[in-house]
Length: 166
Image 1 (cartoon, rainbow, N blue to C red):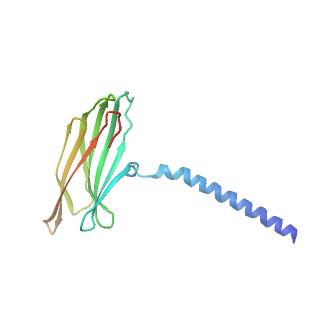
Image 2: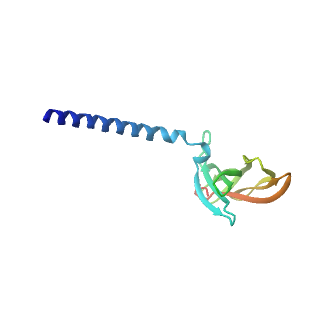
Image 3: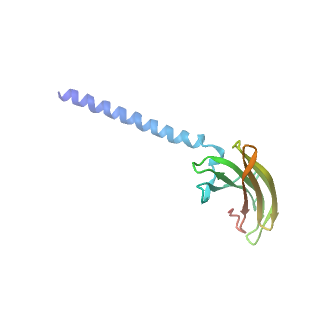
């Protein structure tokens, strides 16, 4: 009886070790499977009356051979329906130089996505001013070939004199 209990304890220890190793492996692999759009930091969620929302995501981008005093980043606003599905998005990409006293946007570009088949982005633009890069997009929802809703949104990426993006 005592021998049987000792064997059972050893088996339980082996199972626990195996379980722990599997958990560690999952924790190591999981971060690498995250989609690119989810690598940024969600900085705000704005809910609208109809249950839809604007989700803003900020991401600092690595620059090839980064020069001290420069930053590159992007800020995306996703328009989502009440169930959280992304209908369309607008992203501003900005390059900045900073020197602890001032920051300047040196380049601003925009990109858009529209995964929802009944929505179309009808206008978009980008610009820069001082330490800001801004993009704007207008999207329209079509029902039976007619516009049933128009939504516009702008997104601004700012760099501080110390190089912090917001």
